[in-house]
Length: 314
Image 1 (cartoon, rainbow, N blue to C red):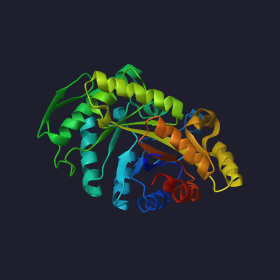
Image 2: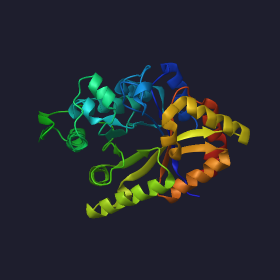
Image 3: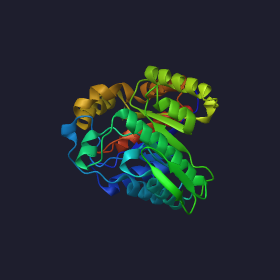
């Protein structure tokens, strides 16, 4: 089998900061390449009625993640461009890069949770306009990371001789795009991004989207190898068939009505079944496998993954 890199994606919702710390510390010392957070103001649920509960703000949580870890890449999947002006986000990410000692990875997306937009008075524009915001924003952030001053006058965002100092510790921090729209999002990833991420889809659909991204890279005259291909997957792994069945049953409580939609993009079963499933993603072009975890965090399942799944790919 190939040798993918593994990451952990930690949802900062319906939990305490110590719960997050436990996951971060375990992942940081156990051979994972990556830990990330997501960007929501309400718990991220596909069913609006499930949006009650606590949720930590993303930039401050990512800064805590940077301070609590020493080895992993510190990522976001993904910041909603409409929630913060891109110049403000660029400055925040430089701070995270310095706190982490140069381990910051910036993931960006167009946003989808209308309940959050509406509650906070942020215009929920049609998807075309949100993608336009994303395309303008990524250009501004990229320029602020490297140029002394930046002037950019777009339809959604304007900066005039804007500065971002200090610069990141990294010479060129990677910027990731999240999503799978074939006409705009994947073309943007081919044109602007260093990495692409998509959550909760099966290996066949991942392979299809991955091929579209490669085709866009070729049309944009960009080396397809320049864009990392990654997928976020849920995890319900047990050491035995009985344990795995119990973990599968627990998913219903965690995801509710959204489970049927998300299940194709989950690693469910015994360690060998999970190893085989990961193999299907690798065959479809995935280079990184990122475990998307929600509270209550299954630390036992994560330890099974560390002990019995990861060694199969070393």
